[in-house]
Image (tube, rainbow, N blue to C red):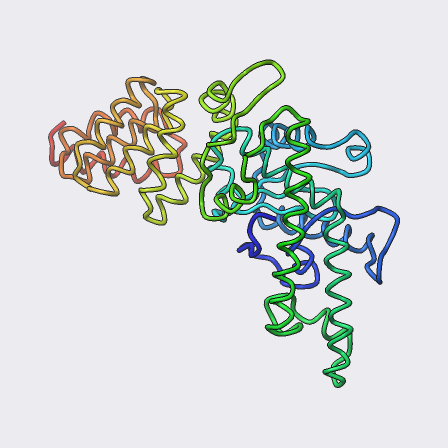
Length: 372
């Protein structure tokens, strides 16, 4: 797990405790009272809740690509033993974690800030380590053992009350137990690191020189590309991956993060994300429009915003989104003479748009003020 606390709407129950040091489990065994089929069932239930809450990004091409990277680090018997796959969660957290059913969840916030395939492979290999080393099962067994010890000091509370009350963040065991768990998971995290280094190398990637430092950098919001050169068996180097295939695959996720950070008023995070997309395709219309939106957010009357919108329209003549951006922007700064043509074009090409009534009303106002 990259970050110990995942801020996603989910019930903090026994399952949440397993996510403190997530991993895989044996399909047919239990240890110290840990019922493995129950953990797998709970993991499946968690995934269904994420789907129901529309928290999972349902892009087959992307998830297949990520799952292939995960499987590169797995041994053949592990691919048979576990249902390995990657799911992308809509969350700007810098986080990833593995569930007992073999699914690795990666947040959009982390994905958007990995710079190349090697960095992403490091994250996924680390989570694979949790799975194949049975860390969920072992961690939960340790927590149960500690809870039994607490029964001796809190005789009025049953073992079931202690373990099943309200998860790590509540009154399961108090501050002393939480401190012990934090220490325990650090050791587990390093075990996963060690396995990840071996598996990355075998898969054809060059692991970071300081793997723990690299993971910690991701937790803090980004990782340096130093010591993370991608080495593929076909001879392609880091530049080929970083500036091409990788960013194309993640373009939807990057745009999602752009929108999230724009809504939160964080242009310092928006600009580098858009630069990544435009470095790959200088005519990425969606990225150009978002770049203009960023300029308008910084300065509502900025001429720079219009320049970005015009670039988008030049790349895709008649593009409804670019026409809309220009028409709405010129209307907002009191230039009906400039807005009319763009609004007309938008209304003609986007008759079924959700905001078409608004666009027609703005066009009417512009025509009244600016002349037909």
